[in-house]
Image (tube, rainbow, N blue to C red):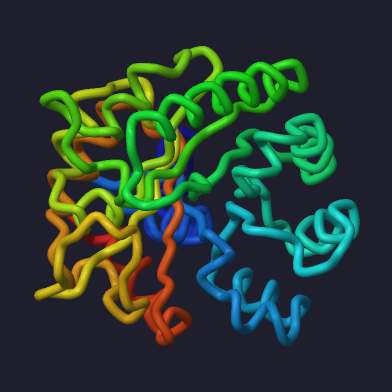
Length: 289
């Protein structure tokens, strides 16, 4: 019996276990980067505008499980959630407008709950450029209030940086002001790596500076030679496949893990986003840090 068990174990190791390991492998993760990785559906916004069903099929075909939403393409939240469920796509987070959070946070909570979200946040503060102290103070008030409303429904509010917040202010930046001025129990942050580096800041440094505050991340690479400024805007084709741009991913991903980032989402706003996606996933599977 002992000999038989040893032989059986050898067969399992050579065949069964090898096959099992392959089937359980999660796309976009590897020896060092463990994810969980998902997709911000805004990446495929042009396709969604034409055909929601087939675009969701494309997301599934790429092996994506987790998704972050940026609207429901004129569909009721319940209908869109059902379409995600049919494909085994799990909605984790969603973006809503700043004005809606400011004026009707209860409506955001209602929609987020219908979509089954753990996180609901915004990616742009309505403001008159340049972003200044008065507007930052107003945003802090809006964020804390929205965070309290969402918390009652078991949903975490977050803010996604967009570049203009990194203007210098009192020895720091307005981004520092937003982080320091918000209640950690009510307000989390989503780091968009592109929109940290675009204004000239360092993603790794900000992850290290505020551990525990960054719960989500947009992994987004930047084309070599992209001009830095505080506009919060850039040509969409300055987004490139992960590993081909200016980001120091080993440093960023190591710091993100240490800082407590819970979910990572690829967001690629370029015209070639669908073509970049498999390349970006492969890079994350192989990156070492």
